[in-house]
Image (cartoon, rainbow, N blue to C red; front, side, top):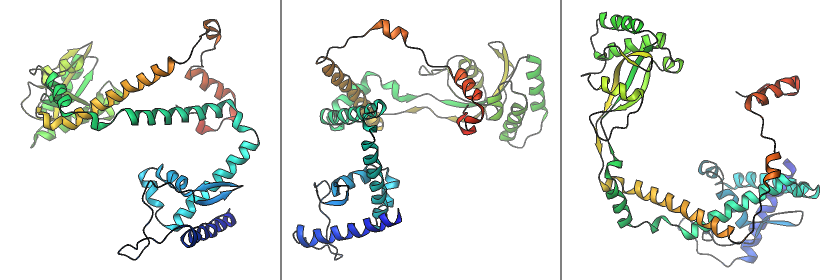
Length: 342
């Protein structure tokens, strides 16, 4: 492909040079002395490459670069990098042309992929026309906030570490070990509990995290949303006065625990100005989804759909993950190890 790369590079330079001499009126030089590029968004039908008689225009080439993520786009600022990208696009066009000639364009999976792309572009364009972030007014934002201001308030919370076991005496023995130690700082006592959790907690996932369970909210707050074990934890942990202090043994759902807290977050009461952008985003997302459903409903009004339930019932359900793995294993050496995923 190096020869093609070289030919493309020469062709690109010739095309650009010809465009300056023949196709474009003089433009005003910038202060740096370079010729200014046409304004972004200007339609250009000049071809940066021609593949088997089909032109790849400058506009289409720019569109493909713009479609990359920001980090990838940054790579293609120099002419050499653009030539590299053009080389990849030409390879793509050549293979697409070959695939089309060999009849791949008519395959059901290809037609389905084309339909998926069309639907995505259609919905994106329609939603862009119908919904804009600018449509969300300050009055709507204020009304949403006043409807439930507590939704933007967070009660005091503590991050909990705990040890759990099947027997109360096991947990009581671990608590005695912790309390028998001598600690210069409260965090040293916390670390002792976490080391013991790593060795003795019944839950392997929490063992790996040194017993760190996560956040619970102050049960004294009407905004607290603790459920299940968290409700029991909150009642005990918010009775502690400092990090590392350990609760008495308590039970929940047939297990026994001791707990402490790692850190605390103060209650957070956010005013309208603090959450204005967050509410705007939520209202915009909700409006887009409503408009999306409206677009679908409008389209459905124009067509007639018939569902054959008898045929539908004959459709075989897909294999479970266990059956799929069993089938792959039975194929033995035909299946690469990397394809046998958990």
